[in-house]
Structures are given as structure tokens and as C-alpha cells.
Amino acid sequence: MSPLITIPEAMVARLRELNPAIAGQIERVYEVVIETEDDLLNLVANEPGVRVFVCAMAKVMTERADRAHDRHGHTFAVIVVARPDETVLTQTRQPGDAQALRAWVDAKITFADEQVYRPLAATTFAPVPGAIIEPDGARIDTVIDTDKLIDFGIFWSELSFTYTLDEANH
Amino acid sequence: MSARGVLQKAYRNTGNFNTPTWKEVPLFNELTVGLTWGTGPVNSRESQAEREAPALAKLDVQGNVRMALGDADYEAIRAAALTAGSIDMMFLTGAHNTNNEVGFRAEWLAKSLNQDQGTSVAHTYDALQFTPHGLVNTFPQSVVVTNNVPVFTTF
Image (cartoon, rainbow over all chains, first blue to last red):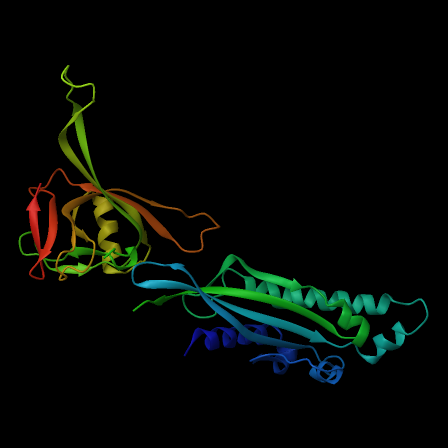
């Protein structure tokens, strides 16, 4: 099976292991299609409906590992989506009170960083035997998409991970 | 036709020197096989151009080898380095059964084997240097593959 399948499956498994309460909402997908507001809102129900999507993005040969193996980088996007619950929304609707939403957003940023980014960026995490993340291979590309937050009340964060793996060249 | 580095070959002799059995060692990444003549000046009033006379040829091999613990080739190279023993290897421009490929063969001393263990190293290689071993009864050879077998000429 291609590492483009086995690596994201292992990423999903690792995230489910660390986040058992939302294990069913972490999945591998081919892409996340957002064409309408409904597409976006239907992605995730109100809290605790956090969803995490793992998607294969690219594969590139980066260098020769040795004369029998080439080194390939496998890149995956991870998207964290969440919607606040009614309590937060109600509080947020009170004039001059943005603290509740702010605290909720901070919690989601912390979740994306500590429960998604760090485990998948860990040097000790080998999604498949021999795969490793390079020092510059993990990135939070979008900490929070404020347009989606303001327009639709959605927390949206994008991360990317590139794992290198040596494969036979003949 | 030019040879691409990734298609060039290193072999380790798992037989004896006179009846070798060549096993390809694919662990090399960077590899430079060097031949340098030591020279002495030969100058005269007959010419204002400096001239040099060849004395001894220095062969050496430098490169890096992927650390592969448990791999027979890696362990053989590491053992040679640890004991300062000889390791019989042949470095060719191509396969050892492809006519006209050329290279060198010797019982080498693994003169150095250095491993960068820095935290930024994602893939571990050992930098090595081979020079012909001076305490064996064989001598370095140049190689030309002829009739699909390596033919050796002692320096």
C-alpha cells in the first residue's frame, strides 16, 4: 500500500489515540470541499463537534538516499474545524462581551497546537517504519482563519506535515 | 555515454583476493574515488616551463555510507574501521559485468569513519575515507571490465 495511504492512516490513528473523546470525528479524506456556506456549516455540528481532516497533498523526490534508495517527501494537510456551542454564542451576543468567544478560540488554537501539531511533528513519531519528519517538515499554515470565524462563526486551522521515507529506486 | 553517480557501483569481495566474489554495496551516498600522483620537479635550463616527474600514485576513496546497523556490508565496513583490518572493495563506473566500465580495487584501510550525531541530522550517514592498506600482501589495482568480467592491473 502506498505511503500516501498508510501515513495518513497512521496520523489519524495517532490523533484518535490522543483524543479519544472525538475519535469518530478524526478521519482521512481525499479533499475538503467548501463551495457554499452550507458546505462549511455542515462540516461540523455545534460543540463538541470538532472535526479533524487528514488529506494527502503531494509526494516529491527530494534526494538520493543511497544508490539503491531514493528519498521522498510525503506532504499531508490537516484541517481542524470547530463551531462554538450555544452558551458561547449567547454570551458572545451580549453587548461588549467578547471574552467567551475569545476563550473558546484560544482553547481551539491550543487544541490544534498541542493535540494535533505537536504529536504529528514529534521526532519520535514514525507513521510507518522508516518515515521521519524533517526539522522543517511541520507547519501550522493558518493558526486561525478569521474570515471564517467572523463570517460563519467557524474555527478553521490548517496544518501541514511532510514525512520523508526512503524507497527502493529499482 | 556519461555515467550517473547513482548508477555507479561499489562492490565488496566476500571471497578471497584471487578468486573474488563481488557483492554490491548500495549504501553509499556521496562518493569520490581519487587518483593523485605525487611528483617531483624536473626543471632545466632547456625550458622555462616547470615540469614534474611522477613518483607514487595516491589512491583514496571518500564518501559517506548510510548507517544500517545489522546490514552485512555496513557491519563489514564498520568492523574494518574498528580493527584497522583490510576490506577488499572495488569501485566501478558501472556494473561489474558491463564491458568497458572502469575503476579501482584494493584491500583498503578504513582510515576514518565519522558520524554526525547532531540533533538536526534526520538521516544518519558515516563519513568514511579509504586508503590502500599497507600491511597486506596485495597491491591496489585498476580495473577494466572485459568480456563481462573485471580484469585487474596492479599498479
